[in-house]
Length: 169
Image (cartoon, rainbow, N blue to C red; front, side, top):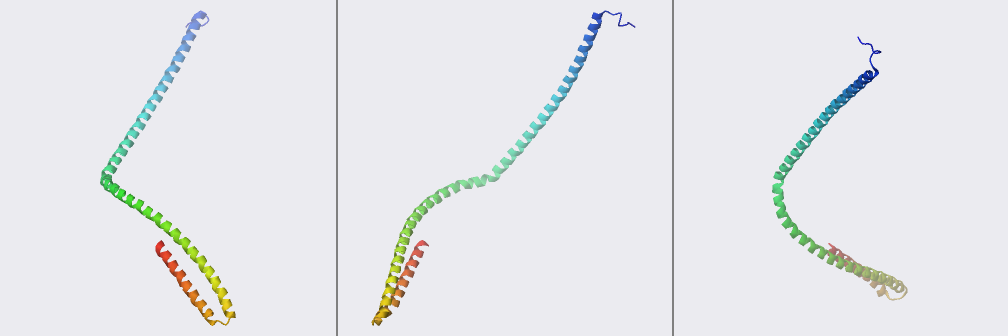
């Protein structure tokens, strides 16, 4: 065996540097191996995810085609439906016009009714005044005329209410 004390220092240094280089090479080789395994795992996972996405896409495509086949008669009917929709739309516009016109008439009738109600109130007040005056006087016919006038006014008011309701409905 050779003793280390007898070897030149440059040889010792060279041997140590070679050992360090070989250790670094082994470490790099191990890291490369680990990176290769990791890369393989990533590729496998990516391939698996890609396969899953393709499968899901294929299933969605098949489902969409099935829906299309199932809905084809409905889509065909939609063409007829669109024509009917156009007719109904025209009728709706016409109905809206009529509704606007009738609402205008209703507003006018409601104003007229309010005027009639005010007039009735004034008439009732006048009738009460006449009634009180009639009781004090010797004219018995005025007292008899008041209830019949009240009855006639009530009938007139009821008829106007019925008329307004018939126009509204």
